[in-house]
Length: 76
Image 1 (cartoon, rainbow, N blue to C red):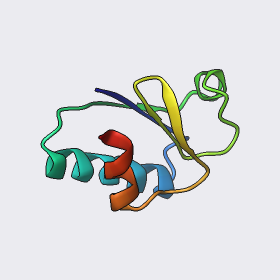
Image 2 (image 1 turned 90 degrees about the horizontal axis):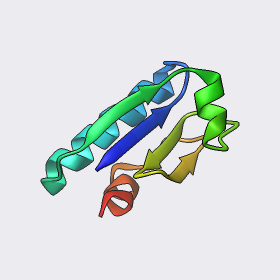
Image 3 (image 1 turned 45 degrees about the vertical axis):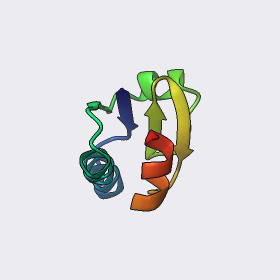
């Protein structure tokens, strides 16, 4: 599963990456997590507010850090 965390490296972006890692570990799912900090690449996903979460090419969250339970639902 390919995961992109979109954002400039702010605290919320880091928190989102950590939440995704925790959710994947708890679900027993192997993920390829990539942090995307280049604004042109972020905008190529159609995301204008960060942090953004993209799962297998599909934008799942924009502008907020979803809860652990929400992220688990997005990864299933």
